[in-house]
Length: 167
View (cartoon, rainbow, N blue to C red):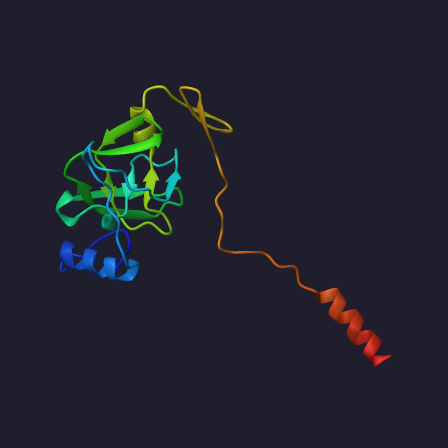
């Protein structure tokens, strides 16, 4: 199954149940102002036109089918098949909640991808080169941590040891 789309033969519930089994225990974001919020791992991407949420974060009944096609920066085309039925509240800074409908798609290692729509709807939010500011609060940008690491090869040490061993 493609992570960005649900095939025609698959139903939404089976895909979400399969994802819940993979992820173990699932926590939900509450959509009422009286419920406690759920913390989620997020990525802020001003290049993204829409905010995307992993489908397992909200209950199944919160999703509606939709078909939207997007083009990524590397010219790859992908389709998103879910949208939230109601606006949900996203809190980037304390005391500042932005309500908007979000798209549903599986994101690698992230629960939420904040798109430019979330920034645009947050009045008083300023995007600066070093981070985001809102009413005196500052949220610095952090670099993306990659799972790949570069290790220098001990090539010269091995050659010198072999040369010493031969002589």
